[in-house]
Each structure stands twice: as structure tokens, then as C-alpha cells.
Amino acid sequence: MPDAVLTARSLESLLGDWRGAAPGYQSLADRVRLLVLDGRIPIGTRLPAERDLAGRLDLSRTTVSAAYRQLREGGFLDSVRGSGSVARLPGPALALPATGGEGMLDFTKAALPAATSLPAAARAAAEELPHFLPDSGYDPVGLPHLRQAIADRYAERGLPTTADQVLVTVGAQQAIALIARTFLSRGDRALVEMPTYPHATEALKLAGARLLPITVTPPTDAPHALAADGSEPAGEDGWDADAAEQAIRRANPALAYLIPDFHNPTGASMSPATRERILAAAAAHGTVVVGDETTADLDIDRVGEYLPLPRYAHRRAGDPPVLLIGSASKSLWGGLRIGWIRAERPLIQRLTAAKPSTDLGTPMIEQLVVARMLPQLREILEERRVQLGAGRETVRRLAGEVFPEWRLPRLHGGLAAWVGIGAPVSSALALAARNHGLLIAAGPRFGLDGAFERFLRVPITYSEEETQRAFAALERAWAVASAEPAPYFDAAALPSVV
Ligand SMILES: Cc1ncc(COP(=O)(O)O)c(C=O)c1O
Image (cartoon, rainbow, N blue to C red; front, side, top):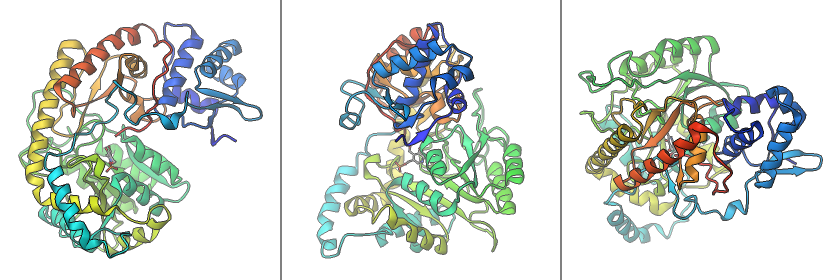
């Protein structure tokens, strides 16, 4: 039995603007293949019947049959008697290497290598471990001294926090999923930015939410000046605060999931004025606000460490909750898998009670490592600032040289540039790039219904040499993508994007 069913209408919106210069069946098969490869069509999903899709796309049945046949021959579809055509991946998917294959450059991950102080912290943590061994090792809430170190960071930012207002999770991803299933019921509205971090929308949808998008459009014009507090000037931060307020007023979302600093994938940073307005609207309409600050530490230009947290610190009794998510993944290392939630005590208790059905505790050694590294965060972030600043310059330079018509956003921090590529070919480009050794997430991976074909997320986290190779691959792929859809390929599957 297939896990999910895609109607002709849903597939049409996922396909976006798929028609190219190649024969129709070829273009259709190429686009479906990309959707399967980048996870927008989950494995096991039943595709619409040929007749339904042909009717919806105004194509002949022969064209759709030929596309499905090509997908079947390439191992991307299984025809199961009684179940129709079901999406799959060629070859033994589970045996595929996580990095997407030897020699492949994996730009689907916008993430830095480990901070240089990690090995020393790991050695020290290993020495500390015997102290914890007599205990069971099952730690559902997090080690007290780690929770205290995390609480101290919030206090430094002007948000008094005690250790029992912190719940340690397995990365920020677990925090998002846990919050989603704790605070959402089937059919609830969840406000999300568009574009946004795709695994958050997946978690919200899995919890039954109907998504309510608000647009984030990072400004691209340079030069410009930051406001005195280091933020974008009001109204130029990329968020449409009017639209956000209206959406909250009209739809009464149960929850708003926001990435205020530095937004993934655009790198935008929400101004204090926008924060204030969204929080006020949420408070008035009973919307739980979730601020995902996984990438908030990664500033390149700002003088202050963080923007202020208006109203977080002085909320009134009866206001709906604000939950903050943090993570060690982007500042320290993704391999640590340590994240956390900061919220009022009763909510932490509620989340803790909901946790064991999917997880019985956070790994101990990793917690010890993070607890050792947090006090050194200032120096570590300095190291990150240099790495990200260099990455940003390399991307700017290469984009200017190779694609002078591409538009880069203002970028003061974060892990990637949300680049306007001038033509609706992001999926075709990502698909063609695989044939040149580059895995990269197409713009629509960060949207809903096939939007953002004119954008590409280019990480600024890689070395100059790797970024050069990536641009060389993009240059070759561009010639293919802008002329006609990419030819058949059989590359490794890599559905996750960070
Ligand atoms: C905005 C955002 N939230 C959450 C995550 C997941 O973070 P973690 O690796 O801590 O699970 C990511 C990873 O890219 C992210 O960009």
C-alpha cells in the first residue's frame, strides 16, 4: 500500500513551471525525478493516474504514459497492481552514502565544519564521563549544568532564564517536531515564513497543521546602512509586517513558526519593529510564537551579539506562550545533535511529558562537550564570523564573475545566500548540476507548491576551493538548464536539507 496519495492537482502545483524545450514527456519525467530526489515527493507516494494527470496538465495520455515509463525505467516509479504508480528511488536507497556519493560536492547542507576547539572539548568530556556512568544514562531533560549554561546565555541577552526553563533536545529539529505535536491539533493553522526551512514545514504538516504563509523577501540593493542597533532599518528587513498582522487577525493561527535571525534560506534578519508587531498581534489572537534561533549566532557584520527580544522578557500574564529554539549545530557542529527549547516552566513540563514517545533522552557525551564549549562561545563565534565572511566574499566574487545577471541579497549573517537567478530554472539547474558533481537544493525546496523557481540557495559555508568547484559545476549546468531540461541521470538520493 502506498503511504500517501498525490492528486493530479497537487502534483500540478508541485511541478510548477516544468515545461522546457525538450519533448513534453522528457520535461515532465525530469521534473518528477527532481521532486522525488529532493524529497518534495516522499518515497512511497502514489502518483495520480495517467488519465487524471493528462487531463489536469492538458497533455495527451501518451505523453504522460511516456513520462511514467521513463521514470519506471530509471527506477523512480514502481507500478504496483492495485496501487498505481508509486514513487521510489533507484537502487538500494538505504545503502547510499549520506554525503550523496563519492566525489559529489554536497551544497544541500549549509553548515560549517566543527569549531576548532571541539576535539579538546570532546577529550575533556570523555574524561568527565566516568562521573556519570553509575547512573542509567537516560536523560530526558538535559544535564543540569548544560541547562544552566544555556540559561546563562539567555540571561546575558536580557532574558532572565533559569535552568528549569530549558529542555535539551536532539538538535533543533527535534525541538520543532516536539513543539508541533504538543501545541497543534489536526486542522490548526500554523503561520510560516515563505520561503522557510523545509523540515520545519514538514514537521508542522505532520502534526496536522494547515500552513499559512507570509512572505520574506530580502532586499538586494547595496550599499546600505544598518540602524544604530545593528539591525536592518524598519520596513527593509524583508518581512511584510502588515501582511503578517493581517494573516494573524484573519486566520487566528494556533502557532507561528519564525526564523527571525538569520532566516534560512534568505539570511534576512527581522527588525525589532517587525518583531514587536508580530508578537503583539500573536498575543492579541492567542497565537503561540516559536522563534527558531538555530542560526541566530551567526552574524558577520553586526556589532551586538543579538538583536533585542522585545516583549519576550516582559510578557503579561495570560499572553500566549513564546518558545525559543536554539541549537549547537550551526555554531559548534551539526554532528553534536544538541538543541534546546526555552519556555516558561509549565510548558517545559508539558513538552518533557510528551517527549518519551519518540525519544528517551539526549546523548550524554555530546551534552558534556556542548557544556564545555558554551563558555567559549564568544571566541568560537569570532572564528565563525571570519569563516562566514570569507564564504560570503567568495560567493559574491564568483557569482559576479560567472553569473553577472544573478542578484545577491544583503547578507549580514547566516549560512547561505538566497540568490535570484533571473529565470525560473532552479529545479532544472539543480538537476543538471548533479551531472557535474554538485548536489544543491533548488529554490522550490524552501517553498510550497513549486514556488521559488527563480531562486537558488547558495551556502557560504564552504572553502574557496569547494565553492569554486560548485560554481564551475553551476556554470556547466546553467548551459543545460537554461536551454532544455537536464538529461537522465542516476545519482544518489539526498532528501535532507540543512
Ligand atoms: C532554521 C533551522 N532550524 C532548525 C534546523 C535543524 O537544526 P539541528 O541540526 O539542530 O537539528 C536547521 C538546520 O539547518 C535550521 O536551519
